[in-house]
Length: 98
Image 1: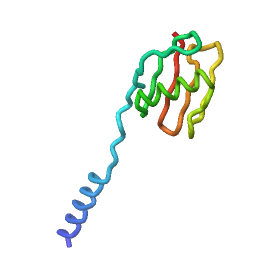
Image 2: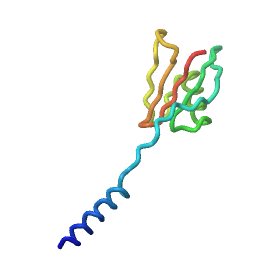
Image 3: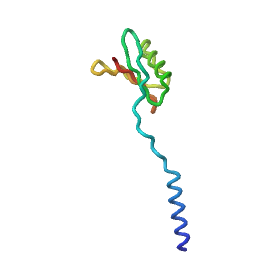
Image 4: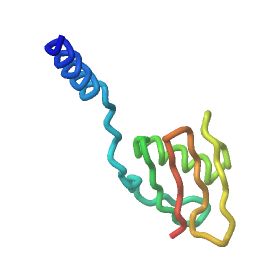
């Protein structure tokens, strides 16, 4: 009986250790370089998106104000240097005025 309790305890501990999901490290957004649009320069940053894709989306949004499909975008006024921020779940891109 005692051996069964020990085995069950060991198995439950092993299952808990195996099934525990590790949280990813918090990483700052990736710097995707500068972009010129309408005579102004912007620094493009992205998180969980390739830089090439982020730059394409940012150029379209800055020039044509076209929101990328599936994203929600928010414009920021003159009170901050952030021009816009678009997000889709954990995928985020934004532009900072330089």
